[in-house]
Image (cartoon, rainbow, N blue to C red; front, side, top):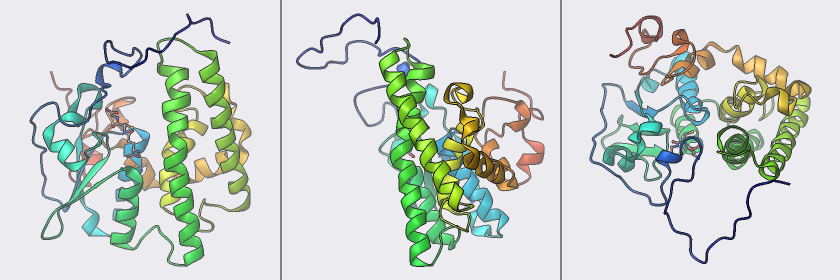
Length: 291
Ligand SMILES: N[C@@H](CCC(=O)N[C@@H](CS)C(=O)NCC(=O)O)C(=O)O
């Protein structure tokens, strides 16, 4: 157990101090905007407001995959939302996503703009709009959506549970780390058993289920999130490792990971994306850092 001092919750919780830990400064118990700020709009049909966290990467991978398939209607402007600076609480962003979290998408291709928030909803919206990465056959489509929703329900245990208590919380709490390490290892085993049967999560085809799951569990399997590869012994999940490498080799996945990225190797950072050529000319190693 933990040697934390015992905490007796008061009758009514009040917001009287920062909770501590990384991201504490942006946590608030109330929704809505904190300041007036319009969002920029570029010339493409799709306007994405995001950051290259796993939830953000799902959407940029999907857009790059659609473009790679030749869907020119998927051309997009990707604008950077710096969540650690509170951009998600600007009035323009809240109008696109009342939940104040990236990613958020505005489809301006029709007579009236359509807003889409929640990464799973964005993937499904794009898959249906372009008729891609979502099988038409009822059985395969249903399997795809089951894994898509599995991801949406499971990843908060990985990110908000395990990742938070293992990497970000102000104190290491054994109970919390044990509880969520157990759950995350179980989730990896769920994926491993599924991927022992089929090449991709929905079956024989690469779909939005893979696009949703890879940025979380693929990157975890590569030891690239929370520095937890050894702790969770991720190399043991052989089928997850095979699938992680297969998806990671896709050029669209490699491009999607770079968009709205402002950390890591400068050559892998494309803070904003407005043209396909930006990958060749506007990465962090090619542009001067803002003073
Ligand atoms: N369920 C949402 C989760 C989105 C989410 O948690 N986004 C995080 C970054 S990965 C965020 O914007 N956090 C900012 C905040 O909580 O204020 C989705 O999948 O779109």
